[in-house]
Image (tube, rainbow, N blue to C red):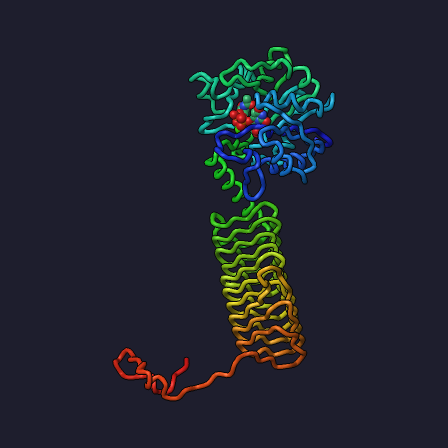
Length: 473
Ligand code: UD1
Ligand code: CA
C-alpha cells in the first residue's frame, strides 16, 4: 500500500483506564500504544498519517510531535464514525485509506500489508480486519449472511444474546475506498445503545447499497487485541515483551529468563551478550556483543561497549567502554562516560563525569562533575565534593593519579598527572604533577591511656584485652 493514507483514531478518553493520561499514550514496553500503531502502519507503506485527537489533545499532540503525523481535532467524542469525519479533509478523493485505532498496539506491519493486499484483490469498498476469540466479550461482533458474506458489525452493548455468542470480532481496523468513505460517512446515525456515531455502521450501509465488503480474518488474534483497561494493558505488554525477547534471542542474545527480562522496543543488543533475570533495558539503549548484564540491572539510554560486565547496577544516559566492569550496586547517573577496561565497583556513584581508560574506583566513592584521566585509582570512600551549597563545580584529575582512601577533592580543583593523594587528604588547591599531597593532621599515641581510663574490654572468653598489641586481619 505504498503512498497510502492512514487515519488513526486517538481522541477517546479511555474512561475504563481510570487515568489522568489519555488512553493511547499509555505505554507498552516503553512506547505509547498509538506510537506502536503509527510505526507499524508506516512500515506497511502509509506515508500520510493523520491522528484524530480530542481528549487530552495537547498532551497527545506533544507526545507525537516527533512522529511526522498531522492532526485532526475531534472536539467532542461522539463515536468512531464521528472521529473519522473530522479527518475527511485530510483524505484524498480516490485510493484506499487505512483506518486504525490508537489502542491496538500489537498490530504488525506484516499483517497490515497482507490486509491491504487482500482488500485490493477483493475489489471491495470496505474490508474489515477480524479475528476469532475464545472470549469475544467487549468487541463488536462480525455478523455474516448464510453464504458467509459480511452483513454487519454489532457492538457488544447492542448485541442480542444470540449475537453475543459469535466469536469473530471486529479488530477496529479497516481498509476503505476513499470515495465510498466520503459518500457514506455522513449517513451514519447515532441510533444505538451508546448514542454514538459508530464507524462500524459503514458495513451495513455498504451492504444495503449493494457494494462489496470483505473481511480479512487474522490467524493470530493476539495482534488485534484492543486495550481498554489496565488488565488488558498488562496483557498487551506481556505479548510485546515476548515478541521483543524472541527477536533478540533469534539474533543471538542469551536471555536466561525471558519472562522476567524487560527490554523496551528499540533497544539494540549485539550477539553473545547474556542477560540475566530481573533486568530492565529502556529507551535508546545500545549494548554491544559479548556483554554480560547480570540480574536486576536498570539501563536507560545507556551505551555499553563489547565485552563489558554490568552487575546489579543502574545506568542512566551514560556509556560504559569496552571490557569495563560495573557493579554490583553502582549508580551511574546521566552524563557519565566510563572508558575502556575500567573497574567501577560496589557503591560507586558517578554523575556527569568522564572516567579515562583503565581507571578504577573499586568501592564506595562519589565522582560527580569530573574529568578523570587514564589509569587512575580512586580509593575507597573518595568524594568529589562538587557542590558548594549554591553551585556545582568541576574537578579535573590527570592521568595515573592515585587518590588515597577517604580523600575529598573540593571542586573546582585540578590534580595533575602522576600525583599521589595520601589517604584522608582534603584537596582544595591545585596539585602539581608527580607530587605527594598529604592534608591530614599527624596522629599521636598516648600510651597506657585505655587502662588508665578503666576502659579495658573483655573478649568472648572473658580474657582481658586492650593492652595487648592489636591484631589486624
Ligand atoms: C471499537 C469498535 C468495535 C471493535 C473494537 C476493537 C466501534 C463502534 N466499535 O470498540 O467494533 O471491536 O473497537 O478494539 O467502532 N475514538 C475516538 N473518538 C471517539 C471514540 C473513540 O477517537 O469519539 C477512538 C479511541 O480513542 C480509540 C478508538 O477510537 O482509540 C476505539 O474506541 P473505543 O471506545 O475503544 O471503541 P471500542 O468500544 O473498543
Ligand atoms: Ca477499544
